Image (cartoon, rainbow, N blue to C red; front, top):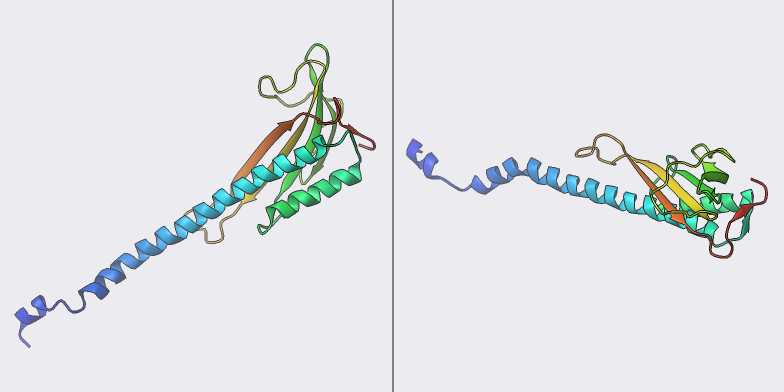
Length: 176
């Protein structure tokens, strides 16, 4: 075979081009999977915070055992993602007639509960008015990608929801 014929031969060009592009295509594919899974996890974290707060806000009185059941619901919402890193907290915050907000009660799983009678964390403007209360549902979750190609480090998602009690002016906890 003459050398000039090898230069003109194009039979393996598609295979070589595919072999050169395969790593880039794989990176794009796995990157899209990782980012999509991360977005879905973040949505579940937000939904969990909203749901645990809403379930408490639907009561006028609650017990520690019922809060434990609500945390079990929060874990179920996170399915199929692992719940070992899920942290949840639900708290009742009450404002006095001057608008000073304190913690009426707080229950948590995987994180520390707020101190009863202590000052509330900084709240967004107009969340609770004077002589009112609000239920604060919080979640934190450390998302670790399965592949770790595009997102090699864990990302912590955290959400906080504020809900006003539905049946009374304040949700009390009998044994908190």
